[in-house]
Image: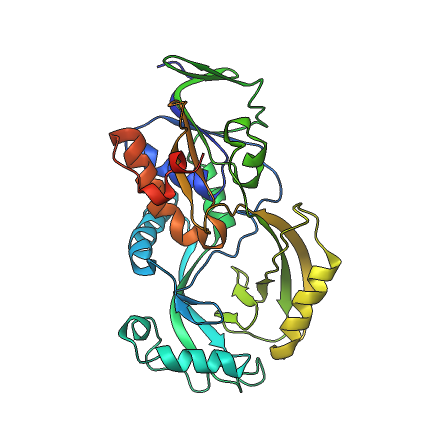
Length: 349
């Protein structure tokens, strides 16, 4: 095989593209990642929280146990192959901010499906009063967190990756036996472009429900335990014990990567409602979540162009969902296994 000949070219080295590349590599394929290498993307600024019980109604994330049973060994395998650590088992504290949330939890706490995710025994107090206000009640649960930026960086050092801003009209040529992209040729090209896929003419019929999210990076001036804390927003640890990520907002109208001063004010206002530790804001970033289909991914081959694949729409649960759906797409592309109809791109274009 020539140096610029590949089995599959993946466009986008975010969470979706990187995870698919690993699965295809393990399936024996020669894979090239093409990426614009933008400084800010939804994957690069993501907190990577993997949480089983979410929302004001305290519902269990659908399919959580099955998705986690694939995600955890997937990330741990890559940690071994890259000699890096970026997947962490965490404790998450859910602090109630209203009587409604407390009442919702009272309806669920005795159910075995919820009990299985709780920390046993529960901390008492949930968190030190000097750190945060837990007077409204709450609970501690077993969760996980992916350092997404570290995962992408470690993968980029192992997987073939080239910087390229792709123009689908001028750079991509489909032919009967494959596809040509600049100096490269392959049997298949897969779009894993996140929100920038809205500029891909082959998938213009897709309707996005994308949302911009602003995230702050803060340094606390007193020790805070390495747990994630949820109360109307989330506070997530990083590799630096003093530095945490705080977010996030949802803006469905202004879909760009420009941080909004009003969003920062909103986040800080909510943070100060329950966090008692003084802090300094180190950074403020924003990106657009590629939400498409009921907050679930869409995967598969283009309806009329078999040489073109698609993997997008991971949304806010991307760290949990990516390994399962990437494996499903890999099995389809390599072994022609069937894709579930509700996430098959051919059912939506």
